[in-house]
Length: 434
Image (cartoon, rainbow, N blue to C red; front, side, top):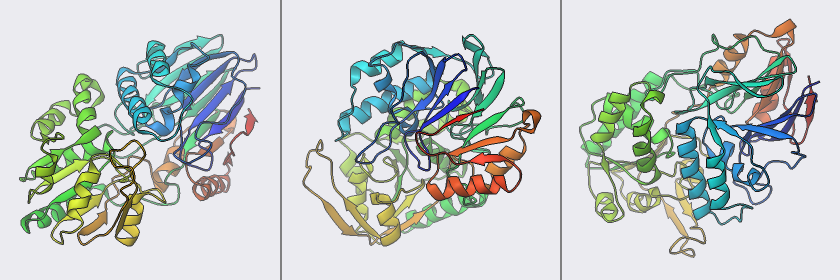
């Protein structure tokens, strides 16, 4: 029997980690992330003896943040692609640099991770041990993201990672037609309770609102995740021929430039590069001047306003009724972005590593605040469609629902069970055999 151990990402979004073990004891880890809470940030501890490989679905910290801890004791190959490795390394070093939390690893382990990386092209089958293979498929989530097919003990398991099934400006969506017949799927459930609005209509409304603000001499701040979301927003603005100057700051700028080295991962790399060249990059020296400049559009992390360069702009825009802050990513409960959206109050406490760690900010927002759901996760409708389009061997229909909050994962599993699937929302530490 093949064992599947769920070490994280169960009934939560964060610290995604799944351990696959063959009937001969060979082990492979799929992702190994962290969550940003006070305790239990790393995945559930278990016996990792006979670990032969690690496979990484994508670079986001909730999937990659705990990886360096594995390289304190192991020297095993980590299968990924060059783009994911590059951005993962950037994010890990940034996390170590700014975090108040003491992680049990440092830059040395990040370097070991890089040295143990082996690149695997999509749809190329890779043997990691006797009767144990992995294959990557495009996941459509961010550039470089993959779903992972595991073949072990004559069974086929699909780990979706984070998936997106609709067209975006940056990359192509995931496709079920290229996935072979499977015995089981481990699927994300982030938006299993809701459907996203029409992408085309949302883009049009977003751009129209920005033009309105600029025409009234206002500034627009778009706090966005530095990886992929910032670049997607930039492509939307350029698609609609926005005339006012677009600025890009912080991690978004660094990642955006790093993408230049990986043209094959993009839907239209020439268009992407042209859009980036029309954008003005912000440095520490000119940030204050740009924050005061009217008719401007500023794209800057962090997407939930937990830190990053965006904080410098928020403090200025809050007092201006002609300006706007448009959030474009999911706002986790308890984050400054969520409070700003729900209550129009910006509350921010700098971490201990900032220049002014004791200068807490609490301010009412006089500017416009709104949210535009440019998610790169599949919604309820598309998650069900994805599962329905897969072919299960011998009608096994095993489905494990993870990477969503308690309500999302359990409701998704229940809905699938009502349709005849052998579905469950596992809890952290649980082990299943198939």
